[in-house]
Image (tube, rainbow, N blue to C red):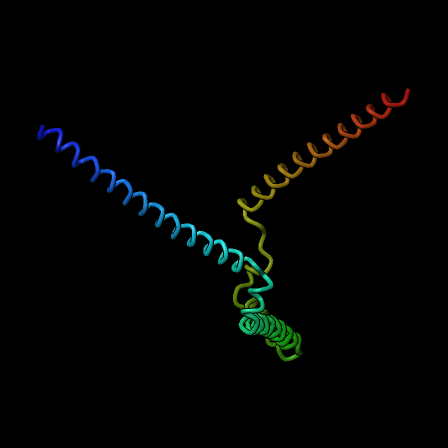
Length: 155
């Protein structure tokens, strides 16, 4: 009988454990549901562009002004350099340097292209001509097909 009593005493305690676990599970589910709803709310806030622009208006404005300033500064520097290079003094300096290079190394002034350059040019010309020929042939074939379809459509 003592074996039966052990089973009887184990049974209520296992039911108590099951109820306690069920209560814990319900509590965890409740907390998890709250976390999921909070995350969903934050996701909606994060991807609400109008709200984000309102929250971060000053930094975004400053970043835009900075980018605009950088672009304007780049354009201004480019224009300034162009004007300086077009000035008569700068052009004369470049011309003097070119003359000095021509006098120092006259063989480099009007040298003939190398054999490798001639071969590369010939290969490139051949490739371009083959590609152009195939493109023209496909265009002509496409027109002929289109004309054939039109004449078949007209009884």
